Image (cartoon, rainbow, N blue to C red; front, side, top):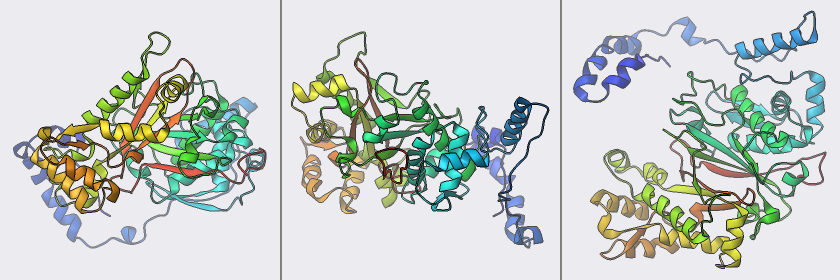
Length: 453
């Protein structure tokens, strides 16, 4: 594919109007026509293939420290590392890492976008070594990469967008405790080897399989918060009043899963999460937290949005209608979750119903475009059949229209300590390029732990 570059300082500054952007476009016409019509060159007909050699690298120096420094510099120059010091993936260390799984080293999990390098068990182990992981963590890392490689997961958008989208890696099941993941106080902080190295191994896998790199194809304008290890944590099942998150997703109680979700974006400068509660300073009743969550979902306007920025895109475009409905991943801290269950009687399911009904907009506040968008979502069968009557009733004077397409668009997990904060992360229900931006994968093949086998 022939690609013509337009200087960013011209394009982005002048795109404010047709009048200002026209001269920029006109300057490109001759180049465009030539690129479309000139014959293919021999180099284009037979493009060079990026080397995929597997030979071992050797570093020789006067001291071990100097050899390791040379290794760091070479890896960074070739964009194989993330810029932090790492453990050199010697054959011995990779073999040691592979002792954590019974899956075959050559097993292929699928390509990782944007450049579609193939993920294999052995290559994942190499990146796990570099990240400083322990073999016990390898099955978790493998499951996370399986999620990235799943054709249904919208990895391309979050990994390459100019928005500062962030990846969330949540582990649910008894394996999290067995390998020592932090699910309590400071769950998103430094100091825990499992959380940090699992997240970093996934980042390194994206670098080395997807060949992502800042300002080349990872175009996040201000970077990505937590870019080295993402937001990696485990469910606090010991203090949760409800069944585990993976059970709510249809897995067995003794299963272990990794859930990937996407949060944040655009001008987000922190975790990409809304924070609720008073922490250790102020007592905020759970009722107030629920109302704030519902209000924030309502303010996003989710699937009914059809303003000037999206109206043209949505018109007649089924996928765009689908992508405009959002999902929410709510991380309740144990204190709030226990109060919601014991004092207010909420189950996970009744909380989902509450938010579905409460996060709604009166019919009178909807624009004509909003109404058309909701009707289109009904017509294409995107609204579940058991909810269609509810939406149709809302599209009448005096009615209200939910901002969620279904109660299940709210995912609820318990994590953090007491005291703590509740976090809400949001993402599109259907990605722009692939179907979903939220996926759970079963952890399997563990060799060194009692769970995850």
